Length: 461
Ligand SMILES: Cc1cc2nc3c(=O)[nH]c(=O)nc-3n(C[C@H](O)[C@H](O)[C@H](O)COP(=O)(O)OP(=O)(O)OC[C@H]3O[C@@H](n4cnc5c(N)ncnc54)[C@H](O)[C@@H]3O)c2cc1C
Image (cartoon, rainbow, N blue to C red):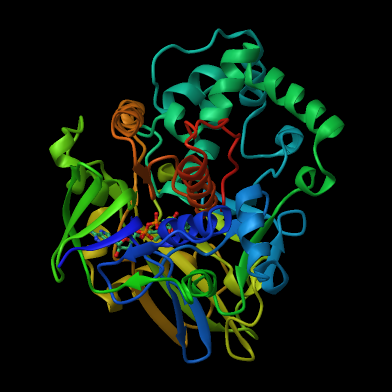
């Protein structure tokens, strides 16, 4: 027996759950089914409650300045339950010549930072006089061209903190389309930023003009996806193995059930999982690179550990550290450790060092502690440790990604009723997922193109 639905959504991660919510809101009464291969909803979003500590396998938070995310949270009353760590109150650090230095939060603070030499700071102004760079350069090539090599460690930190990626491979056009647009429209990023700031002052709502806050929940990030999943029609333990067009819509083959059919099919999966299903449509690549990371959660005695106040630190590659960086979790979100303890979550691996993930848990803990104690005052070894290895990797939007996205857009146009969003298509952050999910839902309901403005996307760590 073939079961029919108006809409089938493949994947019950944040993307699939968010599309389902926005669709239900804009077009109530649609008969919708989410098909999920695993036994839980949330995908990469997964929190670990252990011995009084709360750590994360996947995302640790997202900024509260995205309209789609704000709407989603408000719809569930989660805006009132959110735990926030405002950027204005916290600093972030960069590992620079073996010690932690405060990262400038605002462009004008660049002037005073010891992270960039005086000639390096003067070279930043070169942006005002340089023509837009042609083609699809890497972030590294683009930053060097516009602002000079002096800013590369900052660019490295930004993409390490978001993509766990390599700025010599990531595409500036795919990762920062808004900044690239400023460059092209205003002939200079600095001029474009000044223009945008002036416009925002005139028109933007005050809440969106202030520095945003990192957002999580008392139950960890999973509280968001569990709330979204509650009451939704999800078929767990069912992997979609293929789909094809039929006269009236889509026929979806699954590993553990009879085929399903629907008028509308939404593929809300990480790029590589989607590409596996889209192979019959001849995508330009079979897969894109991913960066895997492990979180090494360490609990220390608060009486002896001295951790500077802030979100955490990032280490550019040239510093040759073992950990990519660490989050000062109990500073950001107090209550994530038992009384008298502090929690640090270090990140290991990434695009450049996947081999480190082959180390066993004990070695990872040992190496991370040895690394951290050179940067922070941690005289006694951690009393608590846990290694959290994320199941999936972070898709890398490397050079060539624009072509893949264009192919996806053309496919959606050629195949009415097929919608593709999820981890790594428009971006990789949770805000990107919620925004793309809202756009997909709007396209389904309104039959519009779904084209949207490229926003100047801030980093989330
Ligand atoms: C280690 C790590 C750290 C991160 N840190 C941050 C952060 O701090 N801030 C931030 O904003 N973002 C962060 N992210 C990104 C964030 O987690 C993602 O944006 C988001 O979770 C992606 O959601 P998704 O639903 O698109 O994909 P996923 O979460 O991967 O969900 C996809 C779902 O589809 C299911 N599925 C796959 N194939 C099939 C199939 N064939 N049939 C049926 N079901 C299938 C999977 O089981 C999964 O449940 C991080 C990601 C990782 C991995």
